[in-house]
Image (cartoon, rainbow over all chains, first blue to last red; front, top):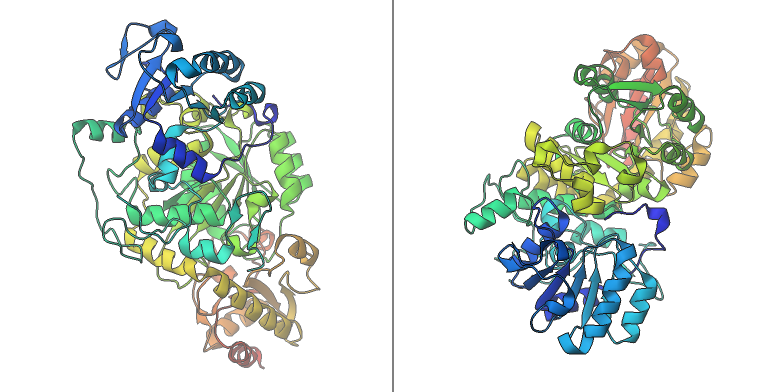
Amino acid sequence: MNQPAETLPPPLHYDDALVAGVLKDVRTIAMVGASPNWVRPSNFAMKYLLGKGYKVIPVNPGHAGKEIWEQMVYAELGEVPGPIDMVDVFRASKDAGGIIDRAIELKDEKDIKVIWLQLGVRDDAAAARAEAAGLTVIMDRCPKIEYGRLFGELGWCGVNSGVISAKRPKR
Amino acid sequence: MAEKKTAPDGPHEFGFETRSIHAGARPDAETGARVTPIHQNTSYVFEDAEHAADLFNLQTFGFIYSRLTNPTVSVLEERLANLEGGRAAVCAASGHAAQFLAMFTLLEPGDSFIASKNLYGGSITQFGHSFKKLGWTCHFVDPTPEEFQRALAAHPDAKCIFLEALANPGGLIVDLEPVAEVAHAAGIPLIVDNTLATPYLLRPFDWGADIVVHSTTKFLSGHANSMGGAVIESGKFDWAASGKFPGMCTPDPAYHGLTFYETFGDFGFTMKARAVALRDFGPAMAPMNAFLTITGTETLALRMDRHVQNAQTVAEFLESHPAVSWVSYAGLKSSPWHTLAKKYLPKGAGSVFTFGLKGGYQAGIKCVETVELFSHLANVGDTRSLIIHPASTTHRQLSEEQQIAAGAGPDVVRLSVGLETAADLIRDLDRALAG
């Protein structure tokens, strides 16, 4: 998921308030490219987000009909039953555009509000199409890492969260 | 204070002093305690078996055992990562342990690396002798971009460049920016020991360094009351593009086939240093030492300003003293490193420096035995002023040739100028140098 830095445009900036808002509002996440292999990053992120109370639905045509972490795997976004708040893309940047366009098509039917592309995944043109369609787009970030960073857990393993605050954290 | 600024269209950037006090240390969620509690505790209760499995698999963040992570140590780790402008940090029991964690994470048996000749004597011994037993070869060179380039041409498989930006004990400053370019052209990281400068005076990541190591025992804790070390990564080195670090980019048998860079991205190096090197060798920082070091970092900016001011005053006094043949302090115009100091250390060239006595080895011994206020001991970065004669102590295991190469020849005395009244320090040295 890490592309050589020189192939990526300048780093993206998202306000902490925007990312925290997405993570607070979203409840159902369709994870495109979720892997059943527990050492894969997508499997890590899925397990973590399930543990934080999100409903995470894996989407992966190679494993459709099976289960990952006891969640049924669907072949594509359109087959996911019920609404989807956020589409989380664990695929290479070159594949992201097609998934984003499919999410735009399904936006009203599935009530999709957010498209999230994982660390190292970025497609600025497709993101612009999604934003024009009224979707919130976050790219080149991991929801697991951002959740940990903004809600105080990432510092437990020595990561610089960038959060400076004298407020007592809410439990 | 000058650093505090708000970019017109970016996020607010807190100043160094604010971050020194607050980074990593919000009030305790459970109790509201304002000061970071000392978690004098070894192990942490799991919520259930699933939570335990997630923690052991690194699938969730949390505490298992204080050899790996401890809530007090974590605060210091995040603070140091923040102050250096880095992505993540792992603390260790000492600076030497931190260097070991960094190198164990980078190197395989049979690997080599390039290091500056101008290092703390203990590092020269660690790299030159003890690391050899692990199958790691260190090639020492003069720390100039040209010499690093030459060494890499001779040893193209070398895995990193290691240097002290502000060197101990010589007062030498390395031209970091071109050295980082040399390292990156070879696809390897530049590791900088930033112990003597601290991130208040110098931030190596701003000049292209990829990893910073510290002995936190020195200025960061600042009061000579706690041992410690830290490894900090910038998060900017591309381990995959380099192609020289399969240990970061292929499934790791020491961790069930986890691929650290892919899974943890820009803090993958720190995760691997912690989950493999710290786990398997065990040099964890004690929570009490982390607490004392956290307290120390809160006053880092104030202390470093005064350290530098006192060092400049003492260095100028020594330079004019008839018993002194030379003073190697980059804050002096006479220093060959004065220009580099202005570029890399505009707030001051630290407070550890050396000077030479016309009377040679015997005069050095007499000086350290005559002072009353300077403490004769082997440390730097204390509130107290310290003095040592390296050739008879810290560097005595080196040959005379190596001593001279490291800036620790027989006539050399090293000072770590503390926070006492400058006039009292000058009076003490004047007495010790008389007759």
